[in-house]
Length: 228
Image 1 (cartoon, helix red, strand yellow):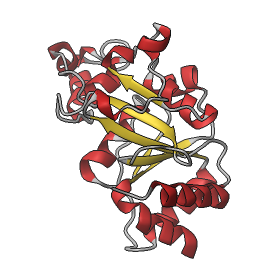
Image 2: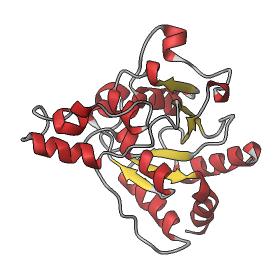
Image 3: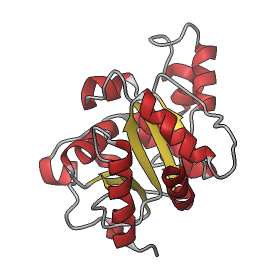
Image 4: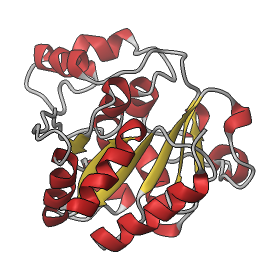
């Protein structure tokens, strides 16, 4: 169990160092409903409404809200598949998720489905997000929306301990999956580009990128941040 008071202090340091436009996000994958804080917004339960996951993240990073997103709260199906909240339907795996609207051939759609990051089905029931400075839970990852100049600093802090560069898989789709799921699977840093949904429904800026830090690497990252 981490010391949340110390985590919040480090979050405040990170905000001062980086001067981000929005709060760094604490993101936790939920195994049971008992892990959901009492103060968390539950879109379907509280509002009889569904959100895109990127909209929930936007409420957390812009408005400072704690939001719990279970399967029934999600209107976008890609995080449902990516976070393992349901099995990918065969139609998805056959390529029709993207074909014919977004790719030229069904085969291209199958390539997208095969490479799409996916957690084990049934391992988690939902996703919890909150500003890192006031999160009342231990996150699995910390996610920052930043501009390219800030991303340079974040990458330099990441490189401080071992000097390795950051291989990453980029996609024009499902930023809420590509920006977080690989970081959880591999316990590695991740960079992603906000997708059309993030721009169109969650107000991601034209200059924003996404940078994710696995919780296991946060202390090393903060050491690098203080040294560069």
